[in-house]
Image (cartoon, rainbow, N blue to C red; front, side, top):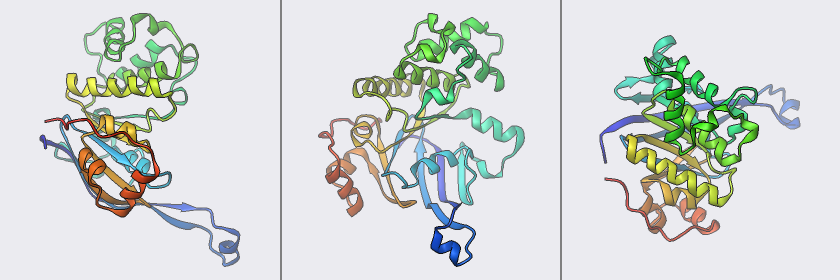
Length: 274
């Protein structure tokens, strides 16, 4: 594997949920649910790591813990030699600049009253990434990275298709010059043909910019086409971690075997990145 950029060990997260009627009768005010239970993995520079699992498996919570959008209860997150859980204030904001999120619903994450250009500029300004670059040039460069023309800078989210909005969300993440992008179900709301385009865009960004990517998805064909390794989660726990080829051709854990049997998936074709 390439040089390590991220290491996660013993990650834990528990949420308090509303009790059932029976639990309330027993005077239980909250019920703890372990969403992430002792999860650990590494990410290499330029690697695309998939996190797979069904709804409720803890994969999205794990992803959001990486830059502490969700605050973990335990474990360590080491990014480029930095203990992320020990940070606060400016140092934490700097790590969040370097580890950017792309979410499932781009429309919900974009201000409907803000032009696409201003949305990209805002991200760059918040993290002071414009430098001496003219604002229009800064926007044009980010739109070009996601294969959108400069004319999109003056449009608003309502004027765009789902795939175009997701490209804008990726462009806004790129406005901070990140080293890791964490994509949480970033293509699951898109048509299959558009999914393929966005998957190819992520591959291009990895190849052209050396980005590391954590890609969360319940869609096995997407993970087969995109990732170098896959971490399989069930009920908050990591049950299997292997190369994408090994997951699809020789799964070891019964849960992984069940996932592959229950969901259609293509014959594996990709070679892992060097």
